[in-house]
Length: 96
Image 1: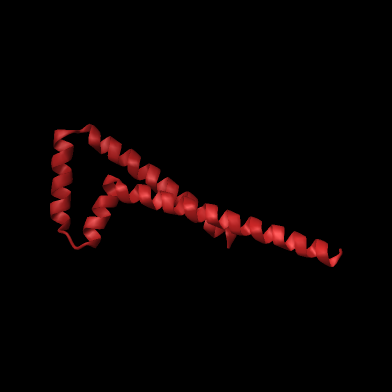
Image 2 (image 1 turned 135 degrees about the vertical axis):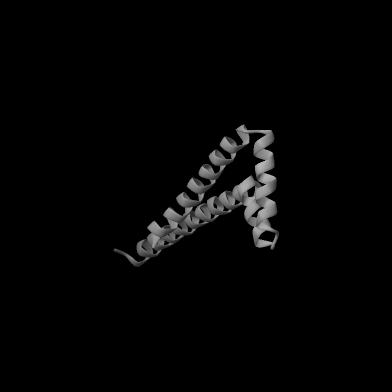
């Protein structure tokens, strides 16, 4: 293979790898943002900030008592968030 052809091929391959990395990073950030804005993400952020876990659980239970459908919505949201993060992590694990 000629040197110029090899350099062109290497350049195209490098660009493709970089572009796919950016896409994966963008997907990871999008998934993380979605999780952080959700109910589960807010509870995790509150716990990380040192808020009282018992108080967080009590608020959530009161919310569920007022709106029993909220339990199902929260479970669906948590599953969707988990799947999104797992998909991003799976891509990264597959690359290595």
